[in-house]
Image (cartoon, rainbow, N blue to C red; front, side, top):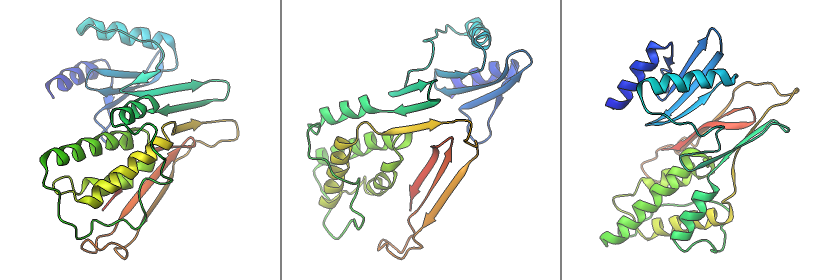
Length: 243
């Protein structure tokens, strides 16, 4: 928190403004370099700009206060691979390598793939919670790993993670079966990611979708499962599934 406050104070003095909706994103309109964006995750920064001079200026500015290095055009960030194809005007992000490592650690690399992340009619059920502390720790750890994938590049896992996360304190055998299915689904789809694209015929505008069950199918207190998807440039930029 103190580091963010320090970095933010320096950025503000150089004309950067912070998004109210996301404190990890800054932007500015530089008189010489045009529009710039800055994504921050602790001390990992992504600088998006239209001119190389803008990046040189920003790097010099950072080094004035903090030792800073650049890794050139973005290709990896926080376990995510970023691929940019200028010919096809596409940008792809995925966590293939991280997912494969996760599966390898759990001896699931060659598991028989499941067609979906979760059974549509899955319920926690009436089974007693597991009491073995090591098994509960195992469950929490694996759900947390899958949640990281779901937050970054795999919106297809959002619903199953939201269900599994509800029972971190008291997982039962149904929960472990659902976790195993999610891992089997990952075993068959480690390459999936999000692709953004644009061309002369594409209109860059937001598309939003939302839905809810109104509590009709959920037996857990008649709460309503709901979710939303927001697209831009052909790819999802925001998503959520929860109760």
